[in-house]
Image (cartoon, rainbow, N blue to C red; front, side, top):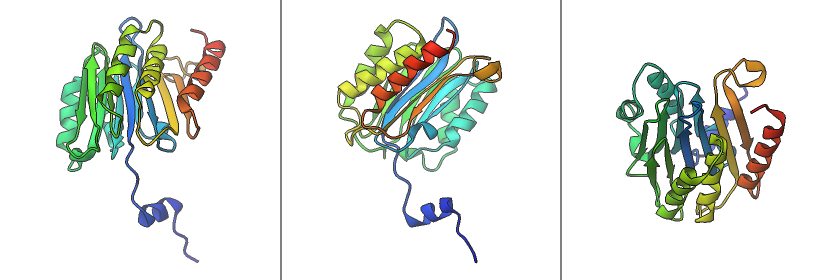
Length: 228
């Protein structure tokens, strides 16, 4: 009997949904931390949007997400390209770029973002020193401007600033379809389990009524268990 792999069956049965979401990528100039925080009305958004590597950069790829932007973008950053140069290379090589949205920060704090013309409204981004916040199918521009303000004004580690941005964005309406999943990824050299990788914080809430609140709860547990 011939069996069709589940992944292929899913592809044939219906198109993949757009990763409509809001996210922020950031850099801590004090200790070199790089990270991504994201929330969406999309199952397991943490498996798609956030990418980061210590000493290299952080990337959020969303809308009709091209996940190769994460893998290839980090390679380009590692080769010495800036965030802006990396972004230009990624979108120039992608025939579907009009549907993509991406935010990038490199290990020098340079940022770049892109929102394709075919991303669903409201879609856009706001960037500042060491961060860029972006989203699509949002309640409005106020979502990303609130995220930017929260990131700039929050004290503490990069993770605290990224989480504050998520709460602020949700407070302005967030994803107009609602809430479902969230994720927080922060990388720091040799700070993963046992010092064998750079995943200092890697937390995901795949399906919850209040995913940002649940993500914050997990972060507080992490703070108690992992030396700062």
